[in-house]
Length: 162
Image (cartoon, rainbow, N blue to C red; front, top):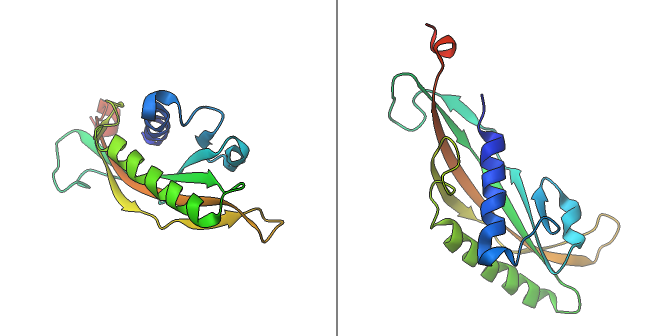
Protein backbone atom coordinates (compact mmCIF):
# COMPACT_ATOMS: atom_id res chain seq x y z
CA UNK A 1 0.00 0.00 0.00
CA UNK A 2 1.25 3.47 -0.77
CA UNK A 3 -0.12 6.63 0.73
CA UNK A 4 1.03 8.80 -2.20
CA UNK A 5 -2.50 9.27 -3.64
CA UNK A 6 -3.75 10.26 -0.18
CA UNK A 7 -0.85 12.67 0.34
CA UNK A 8 -1.19 14.22 -3.13
CA UNK A 9 -4.93 14.73 -2.75
CA UNK A 10 -4.54 16.09 0.80
CA UNK A 11 -1.93 18.63 -0.36
CA UNK A 12 -4.22 19.71 -3.20
CA UNK A 13 -7.25 19.96 -0.87
CA UNK A 14 -5.29 21.99 1.69
CA UNK A 15 -4.02 24.31 -1.05
CA UNK A 16 -7.59 24.82 -2.26
CA UNK A 17 -8.72 25.63 1.30
CA UNK A 18 -6.31 28.59 1.44
CA UNK A 19 -8.12 31.92 1.89
CA UNK A 20 -11.49 30.20 2.15
CA UNK A 21 -11.12 28.53 -1.25
CA UNK A 22 -11.20 31.82 -3.14
CA UNK A 23 -7.73 31.64 -4.75
CA UNK A 24 -7.25 28.04 -5.91
CA UNK A 25 -10.17 26.01 -7.21
CA UNK A 26 -10.72 22.93 -9.36
CA UNK A 27 -10.46 25.21 -12.41
CA UNK A 28 -7.02 26.70 -11.70
CA UNK A 29 -5.27 23.96 -9.69
CA UNK A 30 -4.62 20.31 -10.34
CA UNK A 31 -2.29 17.40 -10.01
CA UNK A 32 0.31 17.03 -12.77
CA UNK A 33 -1.93 19.20 -14.94
CA UNK A 34 -0.12 22.16 -16.47
CA UNK A 35 -3.17 23.12 -18.56
CA UNK A 36 -4.50 24.97 -15.49
CA UNK A 37 -2.01 27.76 -16.34
CA UNK A 38 -4.58 29.27 -18.65
CA UNK A 39 -7.26 29.57 -15.97
CA UNK A 40 -7.27 32.94 -14.23
CA UNK A 41 -4.41 35.09 -13.00
CA UNK A 42 -3.12 32.51 -10.52
CA UNK A 43 -2.81 28.75 -10.80
CA UNK A 44 -1.08 25.84 -9.09
CA UNK A 45 0.15 22.35 -9.92
CA UNK A 46 0.81 19.56 -7.39
CA UNK A 47 3.27 16.85 -8.37
CA UNK A 48 5.96 14.57 -6.95
CA UNK A 49 9.54 15.91 -7.12
CA UNK A 50 11.36 12.82 -5.86
CA UNK A 51 10.68 9.10 -5.63
CA UNK A 52 8.83 7.93 -2.52
CA UNK A 53 10.68 5.84 0.03
CA UNK A 54 9.38 2.85 1.96
CA UNK A 55 10.85 1.07 4.98
CA UNK A 56 10.67 0.34 8.67
CA UNK A 57 13.17 2.83 10.08
CA UNK A 58 13.02 5.85 7.74
CA UNK A 59 12.27 8.31 10.50
CA UNK A 60 15.06 7.23 12.84
CA UNK A 61 12.74 5.26 15.07
CA UNK A 62 11.11 1.94 14.44
CA UNK A 63 7.78 0.70 15.72
CA UNK A 64 7.12 -3.02 15.45
CA UNK A 65 4.44 -3.87 12.95
CA UNK A 66 4.43 -0.43 11.34
CA UNK A 67 5.65 0.51 7.89
CA UNK A 68 6.89 4.00 7.13
CA UNK A 69 6.78 6.04 3.93
CA UNK A 70 8.29 9.34 2.87
CA UNK A 71 6.65 11.26 0.04
CA UNK A 72 7.88 14.38 -1.70
CA UNK A 73 5.11 16.61 -3.05
CA UNK A 74 5.81 19.93 -4.78
CA UNK A 75 3.40 22.77 -5.35
CA UNK A 76 4.31 25.04 -8.24
CA UNK A 77 2.49 28.38 -8.03
CA UNK A 78 2.05 30.45 -11.18
CA UNK A 79 1.06 34.08 -11.68
CA UNK A 80 0.10 35.23 -15.15
CA UNK A 81 2.19 38.15 -16.39
CA UNK A 82 -0.56 39.55 -18.64
CA UNK A 83 -0.31 43.32 -18.93
CA UNK A 84 1.85 43.59 -15.81
CA UNK A 85 5.58 43.69 -16.08
CA UNK A 86 7.42 40.42 -15.37
CA UNK A 87 9.08 41.79 -12.23
CA UNK A 88 5.69 42.59 -10.70
CA UNK A 89 4.44 39.04 -11.44
CA UNK A 90 7.62 37.57 -9.91
CA UNK A 91 7.06 39.58 -6.71
CA UNK A 92 3.42 38.48 -6.64
CA UNK A 93 4.28 34.78 -6.90
CA UNK A 94 6.98 35.14 -4.25
CA UNK A 95 4.47 36.79 -1.87
CA UNK A 96 1.93 34.04 -2.55
CA UNK A 97 4.52 31.35 -1.81
CA UNK A 98 5.12 32.92 1.61
CA UNK A 99 1.37 32.96 2.30
CA UNK A 100 0.91 29.33 1.24
CA UNK A 101 3.83 28.20 3.41
CA UNK A 102 2.25 29.99 6.40
CA UNK A 103 -1.06 28.25 5.61
CA UNK A 104 0.54 24.79 5.43
CA UNK A 105 2.57 25.37 8.61
CA UNK A 106 -0.73 25.36 10.53
CA UNK A 107 -1.51 21.79 9.40
CA UNK A 108 1.52 19.60 10.08
CA UNK A 109 -0.56 16.46 9.46
CA UNK A 110 -2.35 17.79 6.36
CA UNK A 111 -5.59 18.24 8.30
CA UNK A 112 -5.51 14.65 9.57
CA UNK A 113 -5.00 12.87 6.24
CA UNK A 114 -4.94 9.10 6.72
CA UNK A 115 -1.54 7.80 7.79
CA UNK A 116 0.20 11.19 7.73
CA UNK A 117 2.41 11.67 10.78
CA UNK A 118 4.25 14.81 9.65
CA UNK A 119 4.23 17.20 6.71
CA UNK A 120 6.69 20.01 6.47
CA UNK A 121 8.00 22.50 3.96
CA UNK A 122 11.66 21.79 3.22
CA UNK A 123 12.42 24.17 0.34
CA UNK A 124 11.13 27.29 -1.35
CA UNK A 125 12.04 27.85 -4.97
CA UNK A 126 13.32 30.97 -6.67
CA UNK A 127 10.77 32.83 -8.82
CA UNK A 128 11.38 32.31 -12.51
CA UNK A 129 9.70 33.37 -15.72
CA UNK A 130 8.28 30.64 -17.92
CA UNK A 131 6.44 30.58 -21.23
CA UNK A 132 4.99 28.25 -23.80
CA UNK A 133 7.11 25.84 -25.83
CA UNK A 134 6.22 27.69 -29.01
CA UNK A 135 7.33 31.15 -27.92
CA UNK A 136 10.30 32.92 -26.41
CA UNK A 137 7.96 35.24 -24.53
CA UNK A 138 7.35 34.59 -20.83
CA UNK A 139 3.72 34.13 -19.87
CA UNK A 140 3.95 33.37 -16.12
CA UNK A 141 6.09 33.84 -13.06
CA UNK A 142 6.49 30.50 -11.28
CA UNK A 143 7.82 29.42 -7.91
CA UNK A 144 7.70 26.08 -6.11
CA UNK A 145 7.30 24.80 -2.57
CA UNK A 146 8.77 21.39 -1.70
CA UNK A 147 7.52 19.20 1.14
CA UNK A 148 8.48 15.99 2.88
CA UNK A 149 5.49 14.05 4.14
CA UNK A 150 6.00 11.13 6.53
CA UNK A 151 3.38 8.41 6.79
CA UNK A 152 3.08 5.37 9.01
CA UNK A 153 0.60 2.56 9.04
CA UNK A 154 0.13 -0.72 10.83
CA UNK A 155 0.85 -3.68 8.61
CA UNK A 156 -1.73 -6.40 8.22
CA UNK A 157 -0.69 -9.91 9.37
CA UNK A 158 0.22 -11.00 5.81
CA UNK A 159 2.57 -8.02 5.32
CA UNK A 160 4.07 -8.59 8.76
CA UNK A 161 4.86 -12.22 7.86
CA UNK A 162 2.49 -13.88 10.31
